[in-house]
Image (cartoon, rainbow, N blue to C red; front, side, top):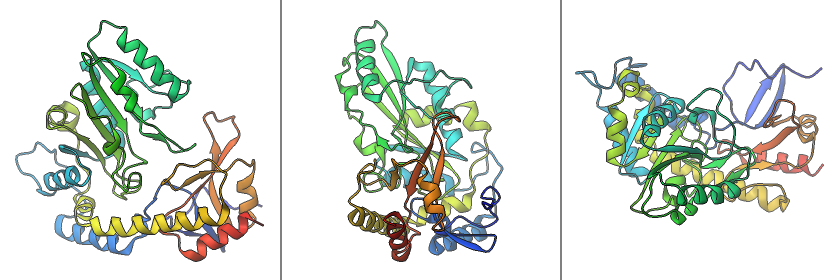
Amino acid sequence: MKPNFKSIDQPFSNKINIEGNTYLYFGGTAYLGIPKNQDFINLYVEGIKKFGLNNGTSRTNNIQLGVYDEAEKVAAVRYGAEAALITSSGYLAAQLTVKALSKLGRVIYAPATHPSLWLVENQARNLMSFKAWELETIEMINSSEEKTWVLISNSMNNLLPEIYEFDFVKEIRKDKNIILIVDDSHGIGVNNNGMGAIVNLPKQENIENVVVASMAKALGVDAGIVLASNKIINTLKNTNTFIGASPSSPAGLYAFIHAEEIYCKAFKKLKNNMLMFEKALNLTWKHEYGFPVYLLGDVNFSERLLQRQILISSFPYPNPTDEPLDRIVLSSWHNKEDIEKLITSINF
């Protein structure tokens, strides 16, 4: 009888104990292993002692904790943005941004855009390829009389995986104003040496780049972030959504502020894990350089690995009736022995 993997009562880590059995775990989104990083946990505890467990006051309250402004300044510098805004979740950061900025122009959604970016609950899905969407978007905007356009997209599809390029936006007429909103929840802290998508977005006078992201994945903090120009950030901070929402835990942001060295060390370990894994297997599976997710082409690969006490990500996509996508996710919390056992089990 298969164990119940839906009611795990311990933290996710490189190993999970269920019903007396120990499984190696290669799933999830904790790419840098932060939830089990003791140095980060120590910083978080310091933050709790300094600021308490949580803060339910609005960011516009007349009495404020300084850690929020400090975290935003640190984030802007760390990721190369003019300014930053931090919310209590990635979903709130995305909704706050699209609801405010969609009023400024005509909206176009890219394929497979995450539901957190939808303006309506049942947003019509764009099923074309990203490349086909690029060409259609260029043609649509260049042939239109409308002046301002809002393009909304993920920075990547983390499931397949596929990283998107946005240089095509430069092919749009320069007399058009483009607001490019990119969700980098899975890329920030990992892709482009940890800088995420923002460094690769097109820099042009008529293009306003806005990056939104969950900080709960690679960065290990229950918060959301927006990286943009001072003008955009000031606009978002004056919305009712931002004014009315409680902020994230100050302890988590305290840890984020002081964890740059921890992130760098974890990133280096992740790169080493990926190098070891890829070198040993001479991979033909679908994966993106620098991103620690590997899409397995074999059906029921997860079942084969389960027999070897290894758990990987496996669920139907994009529809519940589709075949499961079996993916291996590497993390900084994996050690050499974990990777070696995974390699041996794959070759078995």
